[in-house]
Length: 362
Image 1 (tube, helix red, strand yellow):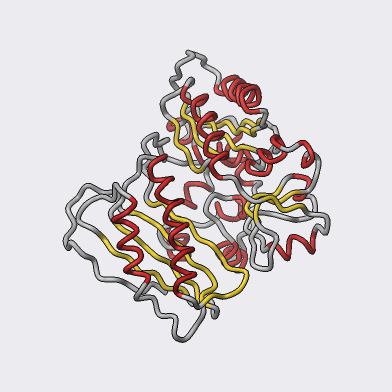
Image 2 (cartoon, rainbow, N blue to C red):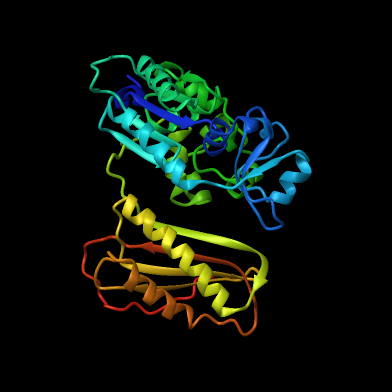
C-alpha cells in the first residue's frame, strides 16, 4: 500500500467561479456576458475579481486597474458590495454543513470539506460534490467548481482543472503521475519568487521536483522544503480544520491622490474602523490588538499597533484609541498613499504587558 493510500480521506475543494463578479452579473442583467471587474477603475485602483469574459483578455485579480483597462478597453468596473458577498457565502456554507461538519473555509468563495464520513451516508465523494454544486446553483444561481481527491493538496489542484462550472477527480492510483505532470507554478504555495528560484535550479514540473531529496529542498527553500517533498509525491497530511479561527480582520483604502491632511485621513480611518467592527460582529471575532497601516507616497510602509488587556467589544473605546494613535502618525515628510485599519489577537491568554509598545514594521 502506498503512503497516499494509507493516509487517504475523501476531500472536496469547492471554489466559486469568479465569485464577486458572478454575483454582480447575477444581480444586474446588463452586466451578463460582459467583461467586468469588481473594484475601482481609477488610477490607483486594483481589480478584486474579474469575470471570465474579462479573463480572456488577461485581466485577473490584484491587477492594477489601469493595466486591466489597457488589456481590455471595454472593461466595466463595478464597486464591490461585500455585505452581499458575505450573505451569499453564508448561504453556501449552510449547504456544506448539510453534508459534513468538517468544513474549513479558506475565504468567502472557497472551502475544503472532509466527507469521509458524512450526514448523507453517501460513500461517493464525487456524487456529493456534484450534489453540492447543484444545490449551490439552485440556491444562489451561481456556479461552483469542485475538486475531489484523497487530501487537501490534490483536491485543491483538482478544482482548478475544469473551471468554470466543472468537476474533476484525482483518484489515489493516479495521484503521483498526475502531480509529476504539473507545472511547478500549480503547486500550493509556490508564488513567482519561489517559482523563479526553482527554475534557476532546473525545476519546472512536479517530476523535476521529485528528483530532489528532502534535505536538498529544505536547504533551498527552508521549512517549505518539507512540504514540497511530500507534495511532489501527492502526499498531504493536513486535516480539514472546521474551527480554523480568524486571526485578524482588516480593511484598507488607496487614495486617488496622496493625502497629508490629518483631519481627512482620520475621517477615512473612521470609516475603515466602522467597516472592520461590523465584520467583527458578523464573524463573532473580538481581538485585543488595534493596528493602523500607512503607505507613504514613496511606498514606505509602517504599522502602529496597540494591544489592550481585554478584548474589544465596543466601537467607541476602540475608535478612541485608534484616533489617539493617528495623532502620532508622522505626516511631516511624506503624504499618504494608503491607509489601513485592523484588529487581531483574539487569544484568551493574558498579555505580558497591558500596553504593547508601538512598532515599525518595514
